[in-house]
Amino acid sequence: MLNVDSKRLEIEGNKQWKEILIFGFFLLLAFSFWLLLNLQQDGQRKITRRLNYEDLPLDWVLAADTPQTINILLKDRGLTLLSYLWQAKSTPVNISVSDLAKSNDTILFLSHELLEKAVARQLQLLNTSNIVSIEPGEIRLHIDRMSNSVLPVAPNIDVQTKAGFRMSDSIRVLEDGVKVYGSKKTLDTMRFISTKPLAFKNLSAKKEVTLELDLPAGIKAERTSVKALISVEEYTEKKLRVGVVCPNIPSNYVLRLFPASVEVICSLPLSQFKALNAEELEIMIPFSDFKAKQTTGKIALKLTKSPAYAVNPVIVPEELEFIIEKLRND
Image (cartoon, rainbow, N blue to C red; front, side, top):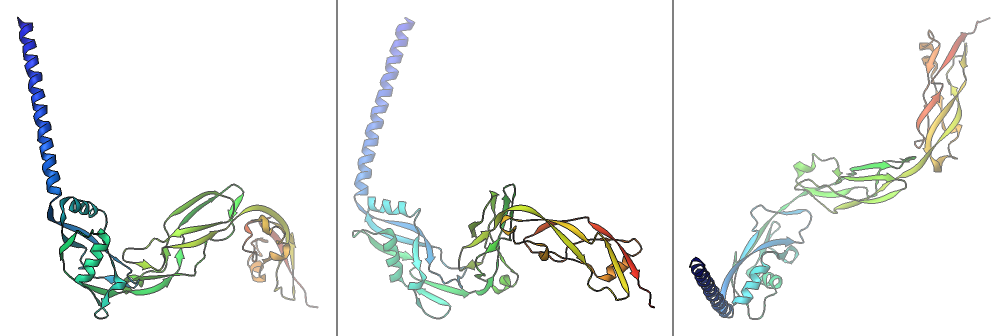
């Protein structure tokens, strides 16, 4: 008996679900017809668009109260209005400042006619669509003029070279400077324009790179990037014998050096190996320095002349011994 009642309840439950599904289907179908009919009828809809001001001269900045959005009331079939509404979420209305008539040096006037043209161009309005109204109906753009300055560019690059290679020169920006625009107060505090961080690993040759400028807030520049050259070369070592020179020995003194010449070991680019000779290096010590060290009879050595490409010089020995003899006057 229980089994019969259970089956009867199950059948009645399935029947109720089928009735609900059928009812829901016809309700959805009716709603779809109603929506389709409404979308085919003429109507009005207000959409809001962002304003994008283009072609501003670099030394111009718009005042803070410049309108950033515009409200447009359109009339057309519902389906067409729906497509405009979808476009409004992504595409701004572009306003070319160069097209505006100047009323004076600091104010630009955007008429209702120009606004309508800009809206129609960006929305790609169909012939069936009409602009009922635009708010604001016209726009006055207040212009502030900025100061300018030419600043050098400081590259922000981390360079790691391959084993046996080194940078043979500092990173060289290929432009003399960049013209930047901003408030005079801000520009007076700036000495250079930095670039956005960039890193290179295992470099083994010269490399020309494009560096993006890292402009502070409120600063504009005539370009957004510069070219720079990273000079990387293979390095080797070269040993040379160099004499120690004392140029101003008084005539009544004799200076004896032990040794009179020393070995200098330099790291240098492989391309400069043949160019480096002993004449390019110099160890010159004034006689007064010898006199100051006379009690110890020893003096430390350092290069007083060497080409910029010769780096990390090592002098062997690092110091020499000396004797100062004073001649007798006969």
